[in-house]
Length: 285
Image (cartoon, rainbow, N blue to C red):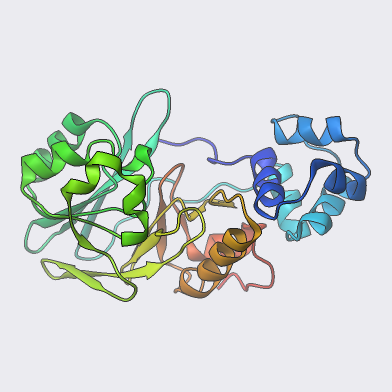
């Protein structure tokens, strides 16, 4: 399904720089690079030698050794499509064509009750998956309000009759689709489907109302965190908020918890503790 990470080395350093509102000139100067060289790296150019990577890490506040691993492309998650969970079915649906997004069909295997998370594109593909899985959809939950995660919302709600929920802080992002929302996701709220439950954890930064949906074995993290990277931000306050929320609410979970992101391969808490350069000082397990 996936053969590479959503964010490569250039994406990682660009997100760290933009999120902390650092100029190209300042970061390049600290790393001993020209502005053109740094812009080339951020644009996907070949990674520099480890000495330069470590200087970049220092200037960007990233974990130096994890950033070297990123630069050398030595990390890829063990289970990119996720792995089985007891009592729970999870189908990762890669939606779209030129621009890809992950939506999820989640079910309780004991009751065949289910929910849809982030119906981004391809309503017909989602509805076929629901039919093939034999699930009765009771909820549609949105991790955040960006258009690539909600594009098929109207069709899915209409076809299933299921109510949709989002954090109220992301309602302004929905435009006309806000009329499809029947409730707000709030911090600590528990959504139950059959015999399975998902706790909402607010992780603002990528958007004001970003949330993760946490189950004892899995977490649906939207665009908050990716394998080896973090969601994009444009302000220091958002960068710090997202980094802090992920450290506290996601990376503090059991190392075996599978993280299902909005883009790219699935990963685990343990793998991100060990390899994600945005987070230092975390034990792998």
